[in-house]
Length: 621
Image (tube, one colour):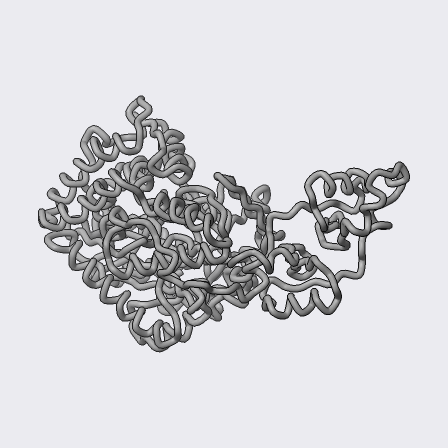
């Protein structure tokens, strides 16, 4: 959505004006393509760096608007949440030392942001999903206070007409329900841009799709969400569901999510690509348009900005997004790669860019008209296999099943070298950054390092502390600048030593067994007996907490036949003493002591999120 001031599409007059502009943009684009006005030879590359801000406790900050204000640099822009910002690199000609120059600028921008963030007690983390994000950080209180985010959020909620339900299954499983698009704010990426030849649009875009799975497999860096091991690149599943408007798909003819890989190979021109997109996905927002429409500008010799089309395009999120822009008086088309994650280091990100852009530019002629040789469903399968399994993925390529390691080393790396050479990128740059990719193929990705480190941390630490140490480890290693392939084991004392948990959420148990109010009382009591449970939370049919069974209150009934005639509601405590996950441990301990209770349900509203018992205080932090 860029920096546009947006507004809703509520009135008939507003919709008419917006669609007049959008259709004029499409007509102008078609005319510019027919007249050959687009830049074809002077190829540029660029990138957008999204990053996270954490506070002194290594958790999401809320200081992004303050830090952005103090930065006073047009390279930096806001993001959806108060704990994310974006730095935009200057586009460069794809030649010479462009990669090392981009690396230098990226480090300079990150150093600048780090310096300002430090004055606010914050640090910058480069990662696809921040490990310490919790449900608390998905509330609208953490949304950046700009109208465009509020309006987009309201528009998507209006189209869905229901809460968003999140379900991702990997090694672990996560099920969440939410009423906003704030899940999107969990995802941070390094978005790479490459200018393309409009005359070869279909071939180029289809090649970008075909190679996406293998490229992603060695770039994964987001294996967890809220302490759950999910996909090697969990961002793919999370972002797909974060702005899904398909609740109303029967009426809108939306057969796929707004974040998608696509459903078929592309044919025809770039204009037809945009037309198909507009037909599939409803426009969500508008803006205050200035000056003549695009066709009038073009007829006057002015290259139009295609404001309405770019605004629309900013609310649709294919993993390979076609974008329109202009440099000087020359319009261009580019592909924006949206599937590369942020981090874990600037060097790794530039290496990812070099690998992707090299393979894009080195496309063998045998892969022209790939739609005639490869089933699109194989390309899509490869992409999601990479997202789920990373370097453990097996790909369908040229009629065979090939491992990620074999395909990358034997096929794609040589193509990347040829592609960078074809674009006259310096041999020193090509060797430096593609060697980072090769080392990563031979050792471990960011996802593999994170999972291994987290599992080791959990042997010594509670989950909240383990996630904080993991986040701090990401920061410390990224700050040193060495690519992830060289990262070794963590050390616990690099963050804190002997730290005591300060909040209830640091101590509470979240994997708890509950019963429903209409369950058999006899069965529930026996479950408590068999498992040694001292307390059993009771939920109603809306899964809200309504009672608590205590073993000392039911022990005498455990083996008596009359238990089968008793209802749970007759046994449970209904007047509950509860606490919140953000309450201090000291206050929870005092509460339990004053009421002489051994168990304290932890709730958010009336939803049970954890259970705190006396034994939790005795467990070492």
